[in-house]
Image (cartoon, rainbow, N blue to C red; front, side, top):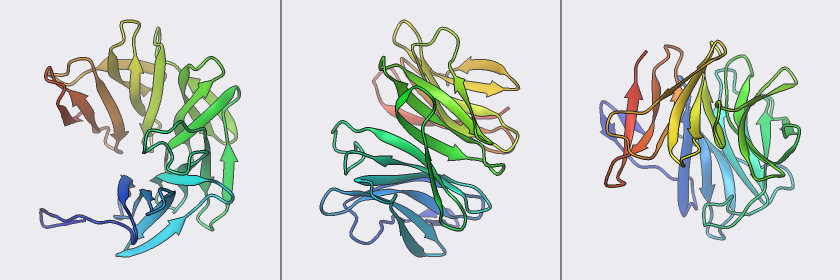
Length: 229
């Protein structure tokens, strides 16, 4: 948590590994954590209070996003640690209503999927892997799936969306280089921050179109970036 520019660490009770994935405009944080037994649980941190969220019957759970109405996105995992310890995992996307009801889903043809974020209108973006081990981005809105593939890419991951429907993420080209992308009004834009070598990933976009993400430099050192419209 931060206050007046001062950073402070936080971990849910009993956590051995904490991954915050999203913070809402109201300051609510959602993510996942591993307990002492290596099991991943979703968590919500709101007003200093933790709420633990587990998909019913799943071996592991992670929360990935929350919108202003309290609807949350996430994914359930076959691996109890949701892959954080390097184990293979099969995941399934879900949303949790503001009343606590779970809805699990996978795009057609998916063998594994994970939801990245849910915007204020309930549109979910994420990624799925098909039977040929190819990863695609997806948009799920009002019961309809749309596959997101950057033209010519061998891998596409949709990582974030905003209230106007703009989507950001990452794609890998045929040379094995991973770039950031913006999909807005049906048009793809590829970009990399200055100094990026081999890898960049746009992970979030706010209502004003400001994009954040990560990239690697020539020394394979990871940095964050901000891209303004």
